[in-house]
Amino acid sequence: MYTLPELEPLRDFDAIAVLTSGGDSPGMNPAVRGVVRAALNQGISVYGIQKGYSGLLAGDLRLMTSSSVRNIVQRGGTILKSDRCEAFKQPENRRTAVQILKDKGIQGLVVIGGDGSLTGAHCLAEESDLAVVGLPGTIDNDIFGTDDTIGFDTAVNTALDAIDKIRDTASSHERHFLVEVMGRNSGFLATHVGIAAGAEMVVVPEYEVHIEQLGQQLSESRRSGKGSSGIIVVAEGRDPGLTYRLAEQLRQQGEDPRVCILGHIQRGGQPSGHDRVLASSLGAMAVSYLLAGYSDIMVGVDAGGIVEVPLDSVIRYRKGLDPHLFELALLLHK
Image (cartoon, rainbow, N blue to C red):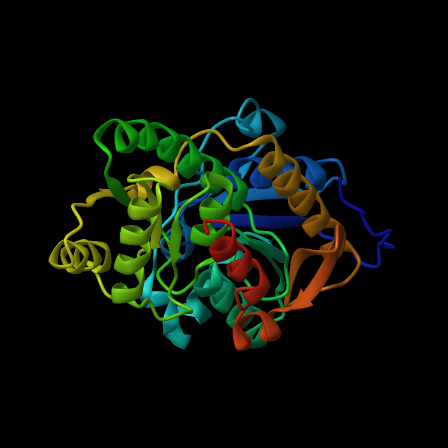
């Protein structure tokens, strides 16, 4: 599925560590397995850090074996646990973390997570001589420099499964349902789900929603016989309660919509085959990049090939929603 680069080993490692950080995403376990198995096959010891950067600061590092990652590819979440660590934003705490790793003889670190986690990885690489490689693990698919992120495909399919069931009720009661998916700052998930679900409308943070126009479109669909029921996919957005506010505004225009918040159900569940292959490939390649002398990079996907992206660019730039894809989502409901 992916084109893997051939990298020449340039340095040796006695031990590396791997952690998962921030919001969990389906596929983190296959990624961890990829790192562990690839490193062990090169004679490198691997430590699993529990609960992300919080566990690193607490010194909760556990030596892993091949058996440690047996039968985990089908499991959602992360066996290493995860956390959001505000303390890691302080330079003195990062210095403590580096010393903890060095005391264990660890020379390299693989960080699996979203933009906040990769920011922490970049800081570690800049402030120490540790070799640090990041992997994009988030259901939002909003990481710059990679076409795909670990967990995105599974989250899309989880939302689709729920929407397919909701549509049965919408049709039976001739109502519209506003289905909220995750995406505080990004509409990738909502747009893909909207297209795949055949939604009547998609609302994303990148584009302003005109509620009057939306209400008129729903009324016109009912009058023209196109349908008196349907699905409107809404990204949660930056302000809590957006979907309920949209529903209330539609009621004021004579509609009678219902709201369904999918919430954290999108983070859980068995990773899809796509995410298992993606995560396994990225995890194994992270070790190859470390051995090839790379540091301060993220390993991602570009046009079907595994590539390295400077972490400085990853955290500096924002991956934008393809406007043509969003236009397609709007076009197909007309």
